[in-house]
Length: 210
Image 1 (tube, rainbow, N blue to C red):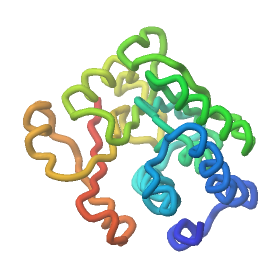
Image 2: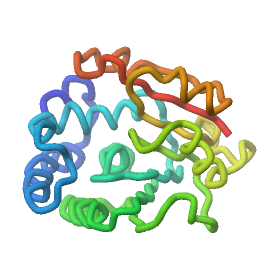
Image 3: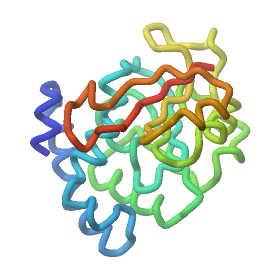
């Protein structure tokens, strides 16, 4: 929890309580359903929560923004961002139902009112549009972009003050090949430039506007 406060000084008391509650809740659920690797659970706040919040450090979302988290797994990056942005709505989807059980139970336990879940694949969603799609280490960029693009609002529908609708994904390692295969030219930010921690070496934030 201290590492969050190292980089964010503007949490409300409620947000501080919600973030503090994550570790005991994830530890408890991880014993029943393995959603975080055993070696990472001790670094929950740095490797998962702070990593998710790199999106908040790079993008300011206005109230009313709608975000879909594609392949949310145990709730990252969507759940920490839902805490950070209480006036933004988050829809977390995954093809593995038991992971969504964890997300739903933790969201309920900390009183999140702006997060919903759906057991599906992103490409099966046809009736909803979002301002942003977010994802963390789910698939290669060509697949992520093909899944995201139909779900995004048109640029002229952007909420004033927001970046244009697009895909924001957290990735690691050498991205040259998948960027080339995607045919896109994403804006790339180094997570370590936002949060200078050793664990964020070769971690990147990619933004592809529609």
